[in-house]
Image 1: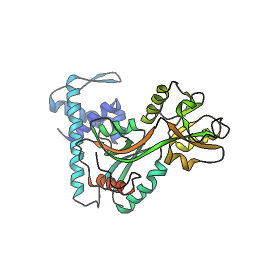
Image 2 (image 1 turned 90 degrees about the vertical axis):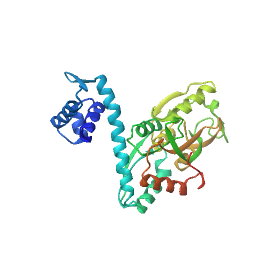
Image 3 (image 1 turned 60 degrees about the vertical axis):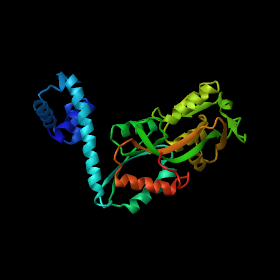
Length: 300
């Protein structure tokens, strides 16, 4: 049994077919099919039921898939540990960054990391917290920026904890207020975030708790686009203060949210018990230097 056979089998299941798996692995469909057949022959069991264009895992296939994914993750951990021997003269960091606030919080951090460790290959992934946590648990990422997780399968290091402010159009009837309670926005159209944003869930839940369901007029994960929509009179949006303040422009008013105290608490997260490469540890060390929370935060 070879790792390439396991990798081919896992990718066929993930992609739903041999052709797409071949594209992902940069191999021909026949090569992928042969490797899966060799794995079935070696194990003496049928792993997939082939019915026309559709594939279905057999009971044996489900068992092999679970162990294959574990073995491939362990293999990745092995390579990461061996890379450490080079003292960061080579290696790879599979890093996830939030879509929201990336320019404000992480552009300079990323540039500083690249200056310190120019030989580390950084493979970036961007998305909301839900996608980030899923990618971490599947072993696709080593570290990811996410709202502080509740999943006991994840460990994390806090990075920032920002209140939310409200961006409203300049002609909004509440634009002149010094601060606002969320309930005061019940009659305003809302610009929300993408489904993969846990912050979206928090906001919707907070609205329901104060007695209304927001009237949604659009969604995006790009803060500058959301601000432009507000300036165009399309609705209001709640953004982390550190993200919202640089977006102020003619046509917009920023009003602090007074009640409830909604927070954007970004942490860098990894799978509990997973080996953290020296490249990942170096990123966490850099975060402690630059964290808006201060340099004395400890890993939880």
